[in-house]
Image (tube, rainbow, N blue to C red; front, top):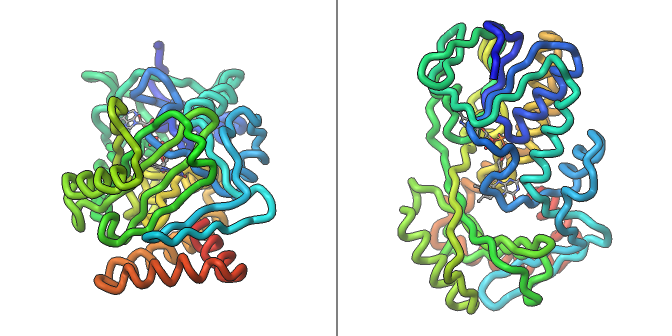
Length: 349
Ligand SMILES: Cc1cc2nc3c(=O)[nH]c(=O)nc-3n(C[C@H](O)[C@H](O)[C@H](O)COP(=O)(O)OP(=O)(O)OC[C@H]3O[C@@H](n4cnc5c(N)ncnc54)[C@H](O)[C@@H]3O)c2cc1C
């Protein structure tokens, strides 16, 4: 690909955050280069679960229906033998296809002559004025956006540490009649302060969990998850494990002419693991700030307010130690009362 020597904005990473940022900047006429290390834009290790607010945001920016894999008017919470289904009364949760989401977002850039997309290209170094791709090709920028996920090279260039890092992993298996709802399984002895999930898609389902390496080593988490799968009689024979870090260590998103969006900023919720919505919001709002430096982003403030509540809940669960299982029992029992269920959903989504 032929590059200019200089772009108004260089975006590293073509996930939901980077692509949304490129779309908003592209529509305003800025010269934008978005660089993605993978050849194919879209696929990402992710359970693809979205709440109504995220879908409504995507609908507002024209999302076609084929990105949605499955819809849910309820959710099942489980603890031990206890199982509670909260009925929403209308569709409230969705699973989406990450490849289709990425390809649709990419398609929106096709007619923008001022936006160049370079896939299969790795950013290997960053300086105050340039990004370096491959061995030594230098590209100058006025603004740089790090939308490059949980192992962000842009974040490292800024010298921002990442201390609160989780890892989530999943198995994608054929859809089974046994699971038609989204299920969240709390079990302190197995998943500590986190949970296991079952997310059905159109033809497959994601079964997974996560852990914080500082609290539980990878091997221990996997051993406990296997134990749970065995108990559930779920076979993962010949199904590859997919794992990826989740950065929830937010320390700012605006650093002079450099910005961080989505997972690179640590915008993801450490409590629920939800990060697609946050990435879209950060991407779009960072573009607005670049276009108008006076722009005060209410949407980012809202996301951060929710994130603070989530992090406080997570900390409470971590610190509750031997009482955690009792708390989970209480939660799964209490959500049978409609207003309690609504509060929990409000917190989780
Ligand atoms: C197992 C798992 C399950 C999850 N489930 C959910 C869920 O159900 N719902 C939800 O909302 N969120 C979920 N998440 C979180 C969600 O996947 C992320 O929060 C979201 O993808 C963040 O979007 P992003 O645009 O910030 O970064 P990403 O989607 O990670 O995109 C970053 C892009 O940058 C590229 N890149 C990185 N480094 C470079 C480089 N040096 N040069 C060029 N390109 C680079 C990467 O290839 C990638 O395409 C899950 C995460 C995991 C791991």
